[in-house]
Length: 258
Image (cartoon, rainbow, N blue to C red; front, side, top):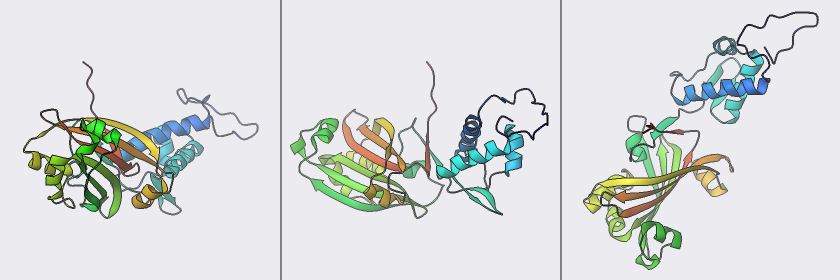
């Protein structure tokens, strides 16, 4: 293989397709990409990855390339390696689809116990101008601000901050914010189904305060989701900013080419 030196004087036959000209780092990334996809997809039900020798055969890669691939996944916080035990998944990753409008609790039903720690639930008299613009109301119209730390099986999953239009928000404040998705409370209050949402996803480094709440190192990469949700009649009612632990959730979508 490209990353394992042969003993002096020896000759080695390189099987076709082994890609011997590729540097080890490139081969390791290729192996890591496949393993990451398998881990996120729940391929290893018992949480334990095959040993290095088995992975080498599976990927037609040298042991050094496999070890480097596993180090990459370990550095991402996806797996842990222990002598005598092997390589195991640190935490299961759960999928959250971006092709359907649904709350996290609804999406993760059956995957564990969802609880919400309500950190803020209050009426605000003046909206930040950027939020007012998104909700298409004057800043002085006021709103309701809710911030919740979402837990999955007693481990932090996301920090959700949302501004709701005043009329809808006051009704949501009377609901069970600790036990229910905001989406369902909005629909009950407005007596109207949600219709659509505009979603932007990017990666940010967690600031110290957010990192402490999510129990990740300061500066760790987290998903940042900005979402504006509208009722079926098109009126925007929920401007949301979510920070999600990237080691606990995978975002996916099914796309169709017209």
